[in-house]
Length: 108
Image 1: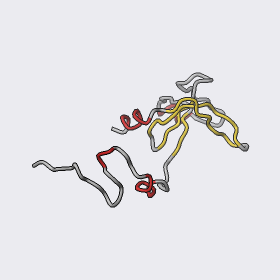
Image 2 (image 1 turned 120 degrees about the horizontal axis):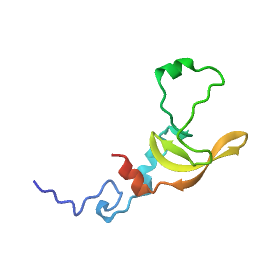
Image 3 (image 1 turned 30 degrees about the vertical axis):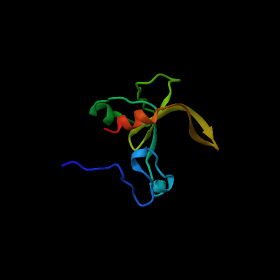
């Protein structure tokens, strides 16, 4: 069964086939909370090593000192950057932001 979508509109949001979106139509999305995390690096350890951990124990990570840190939003890589101080707290200065097309591609 075929559907004719040539004149599809949605409650005053304009022609959906024109590729334009009325910004007000997504306003409800702007207040959705997201989990943001910064990853310094990763490591794989044995249970034996986990049980041996004490204060002062050092875990070697897979990234070299000076390499960019990874910024994840809801567990999806969004950008990379360098650690900075911002009002006596850690911050991240973005140096490489994943393009919107790549972000959408990585959702699958």
